Image 1: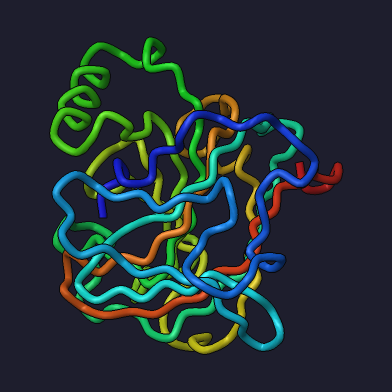
Image 2: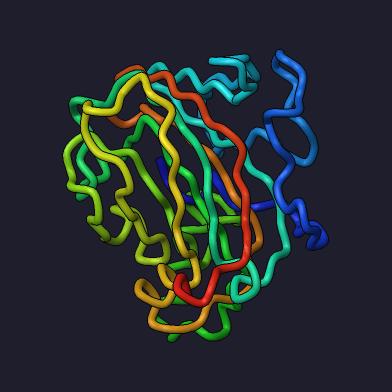
Length: 239
């Protein structure tokens, strides 16, 4: 799936709660505002998303069958003030044909994106031109900087590489393989540190988050549950 499908809508005001939780929503297909479904231009088969109860907790279920779509939440957060992001997810399977290094294999049972409000005027001319071409082809809202945390089929946890589509999206493997399938897993990352490592500079404001299950490139199927996403300050030892 291309990163253009996860661009955030206009930023929301910063608040202590940050991200609207799935856990307080009602079961069904209606997403709690301001979460919204986002598609790439020309997508014919979107991933299906619905709110379901699992092990006593409400979560967002994604069902993909040779499909793609993302669910996006706008934000306006200071990454230096709230650098830690955490979430829970539960994948039922990984994708046999997935390959983090190729466009043909660019599918994942689970992704969480953190999007940044990056000023494209700061990019070198060549990168601005490449981004402009990508936006013309894949959509005008393709992000100028994003971190994409994935549950990969094969790549080892800790693997960090550029998206097969763009060097403005950094892929970070935080779960891998089949060992923990069918279990709720907790993930926490320092987005400020991850942005520095990927882009070599301090992060701009966080403009949104997105959850994604996509199988359009591999033609496979996947089902995943996503729990609440939270941002919080870091302690001195976590900075």
